[in-house]
Length: 101
Image 1 (cartoon, rainbow, N blue to C red):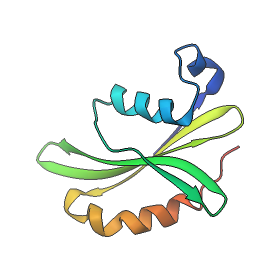
Image 2: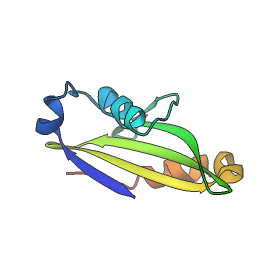
Image 3: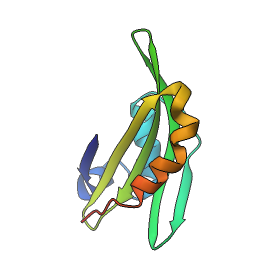
């Protein structure tokens, strides 16, 4: 799942950095998580891991936020919570393949 939001629109709410963007996304989702930075391989993005329960299933997520010229992008990778730790390296690998405009 992915979402794109205008940097101009978000700046009206004081969101002017990738750090402030991921904090706002997590807050609006009622999630708390440790925010980490990926800054290598000519890539720079923020990410965090969190869980959410739907019905009787708990899922683990990796949220990735990236910055383009005019937009911020939010992407989520998901799996059953019990598989999240095993999938983290795979999610980082997938995130490296994403390009934004």
